[in-house]
Length: 149
Image (tube, rainbow, N blue to C red; front, side, top):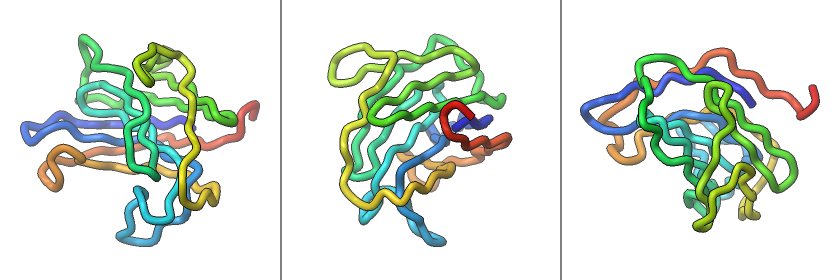
């Protein structure tokens, strides 16, 4: 999956946006986390950190850390490639490293999740740390393809 994401900085706090995959269908007003959902969410934050969140159980699996500089006022290209139980992520063409279980890795191991994997994918927006106080995230140029296509 590849998308250009805008995650604007706000005095209210850090916002997140990014692709999710291997989940179940969500209805209007329904969230993608917990319940019968499964899968993963690759979140770019307005601080420039990328987090991988398991949707069920709801937990951060790996983090890239916050870069020394990040311009939250412009679109950034996020690409996530998942094959089997492995995930690799690029931000603006640079492959990211993550901290997972105390180790630095360039390929994140995807643990099993509970819930229903109906193969759905999409983009999710959040304001996890300051619920309802910040926003403005946008996405453009979304591409979802099988590896090798």
